[in-house]
Image (tube, rainbow, N blue to C red; front, top):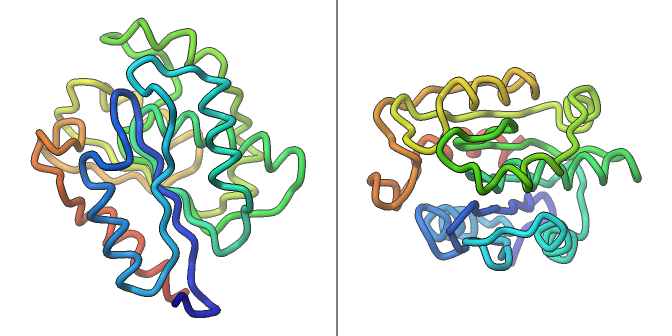
Length: 194
């Protein structure tokens, strides 16, 4: 049973991933054990992501945004979630507690040109996102083979996020040793009691 001051944390996976991959189940369990609501958002056909479909899935699974909401996203999920937040903030106002973005980006990836059509559909307003999401955290890996660290830095700057570099973490995937992601947990913990 979640307490009245429980937070709602939504975990958004990325390209070629599912809610059961990488560190998502681990984080979800830790949040639930701490007495909070945690949902791992399912995005359709992640190996061939469709921008509009992903937005519909986000809308269905994150119906309410409020000051107890925390979004945690990975890779392409960061861009999808940020576009969704941007549209919601501009339509309805409101604010969320925080956003935590691991290996996020908003510019095309040199190694994944197939994602360019998806990336080009995202509309992000820096001022709106900073106003409605006053706390943002960006995590980058020093040796990310998928998202070059400068692109994650660029996104962090755009969001006015607190940026943290994790040495030699690959793309924060299970294959990189990230079945657990303690850095994310350390960032979330203070937000849960606040």
